[in-house]
Image (cartoon, rainbow, N blue to C red; front, side):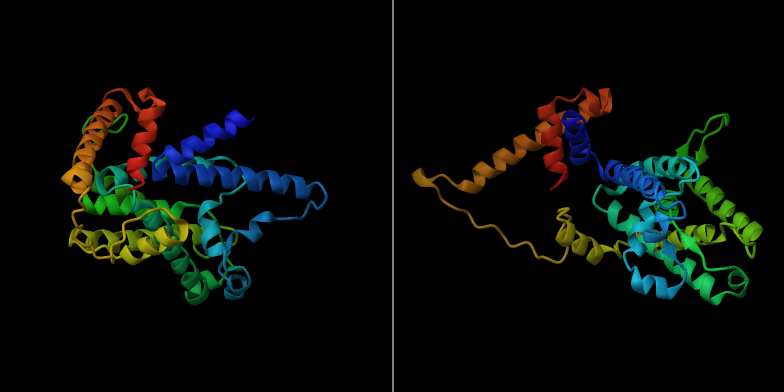
Length: 306
């Protein structure tokens, strides 16, 4: 058991932000499922989702403010499909995002997309007449966050092409993203006003999409609208995001004994380290991550945290 936990810990620590987010989502699902089963043995009517899912009722948010965050890591127990498809979409869109924009921006976008999805969900259920016809809405799932990531890569890299199964010609990324957004509009139209439908979920997707579009258009102009949020997350969670608002001071040369300059030694060490990282990345590209030795994995992980 200890070896399994150590392996999970190592995979989490050495994995990219995409891997971390997927592991948190899956772990949340498993733990909450087990807790729900144990409690339901004594109290069959107990619904654990009410303690981490987000409600459209403002008073619920006042008494359970954490749900605005926990909802985007939770998934339905009605089947494995809700979790499975969200994680599939997160893996592909998140991996592409990290490859293009780096590992450090993904977490802040995941949370911000989830917040935007929740905001549109709440506004819709409280101020749009069509949604007021049904009872209070209830929201769980990573869909809004994943949709935000998907829209960002679609808007920023619209002409990148992908080959899809059963389709002979490659398709531009913007068309793939557009198809999923159109699908959300169709589902809202089909579900709005129906008791027990998932119109709140589709509405949150659009909230994530709107924020993703805004984020991408600003990024294309060189303006990262989540810069301060990234710094905040770095300070709170010690994720070592770049300190965008800390001015870099010019380093002063320190003279060691014998008249040698310390900075010169540091420069040579950094150059050697970069050469090693380049070799490791080439090995990953050629043979995959699992082909790395433990030492190489640790070196790569230490660099990704910088």
